[in-house]
Image (cartoon, rainbow, N blue to C red; front, side, top):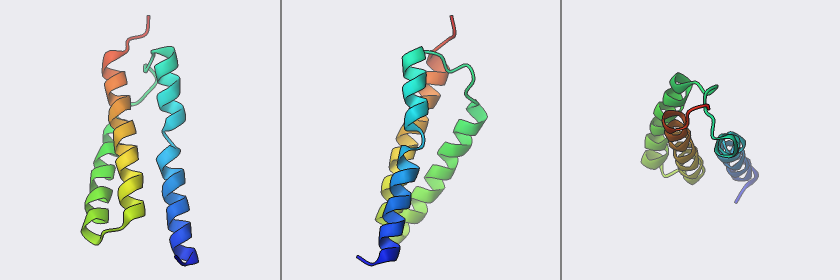
Length: 86
């Protein structure tokens, strides 16, 4: 694996973990009031586009990172729709 592939894998790793703190906070507080549903739908849409691109070209860092981001984004949408602030 050359250095640019390492950069791609590292970037994919960083991208994959970006939503973890938000998911954890919403889960802990059971409040998703401040999350933008519009932003989450944009993220899911862009994730589907990136996944299509990654799968078409068999770019594993793109596929893995966007699969994880897609799952976390859908989870945040679920939280947004089910958790109500008390």
